[in-house]
Length: 98
Figure 1 (cartoon, rainbow, N blue to C red):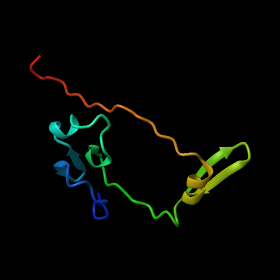
Figure 2 (figure 1 turned 135 degrees about the horizontal axis):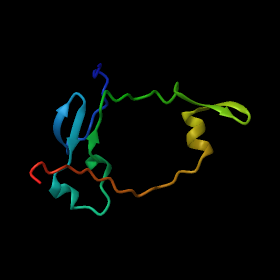
Figure 3 (figure 1 turned 60 degrees about the horizontal axis):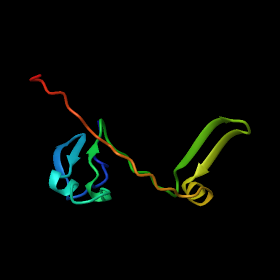
Figure 4 (figure 1 turned 30 degrees about the vertical axis):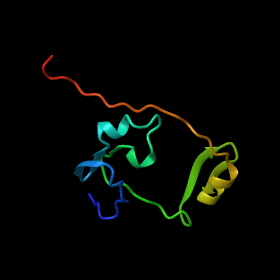
């Protein structure tokens, strides 16, 4: 797999692996905030991460009632309202000694 174009990740994360990226904040950093700042959100991937050029990337939704619908990033940002969702992400592990 090609990892040459991986976007940068926060220097505040503790990197456990780079190909694919596996990085997490310290426990002390997590309990410091009610809502985790973007720089402290953990990164877990199973392959390379791509960044897309907003000026040339389009999203196509196939099979709508009016046929295919293609939207640019500008369309997506200007047509739809931005909403904020607070979510909880939790990773767990199995204790092999149980």
